[in-house]
Image 1 (tube, rainbow, N blue to C red):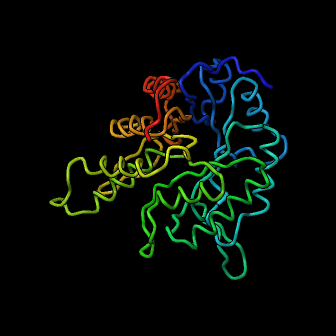
Image 2 (cartoon, rainbow, N blue to C red):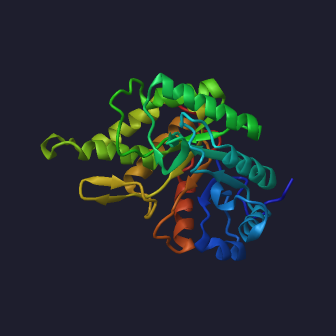
Length: 302
């Protein structure tokens, strides 16, 4: 077992940050106290090379979580075999604490060829889409020989023929496959905020996005949640964009406290992917998340 002297093993639950290229050198030099680092899996595909060498340096000091954006788990044409081969090889080399990806689709057939949208496209919350997602998640778990964590999306459209609640869709996925859910609190808020912004101004109700988000969190059974994500978003005219380019807003911190009360001490990750700040700013966000952690003896809400 690799020792990780710079992780906070006595924290109520692990808190980590997304480790991006701009912070590689500083973090390796300073080795701040963090419980884990998260990296995007696809940035480290391929055998050897400078990127993997850097990642393995970090792995000597911190647990690492692999977070993917390319499995396209909800795609009806299935998971790309090459992508899964690369991920399996990376998992074997890094021995991550968690492996995750998104409840989305991106792959489809066009003119007899597989095409990839290079985006996280939302699924219809229907039984047939759930069956596809379950089959693909199970295939990945069988190959990796470990449970996968599956993240809820920030989505800018909804399928008109969805007939399941998103929370029921995700909870059933976890029940059928044994996977866990990665609940992105910012994504929930962005979706609720966009629902409110789509209404005429006179129909908007103050505080409704937060009420909607708390209800979303309360519909998930606590035992299926294996990680929480926090991030910032931006507003452009009458739409909120999940750009991971700013500090976590006050409303998302409120929802994070609600999620902690609901799900208990699960790992928390602070993401920041665009307009990267100095590392100290990101570490301060992680410290704020840690300060809100419940005591180890706190009970999980029923």
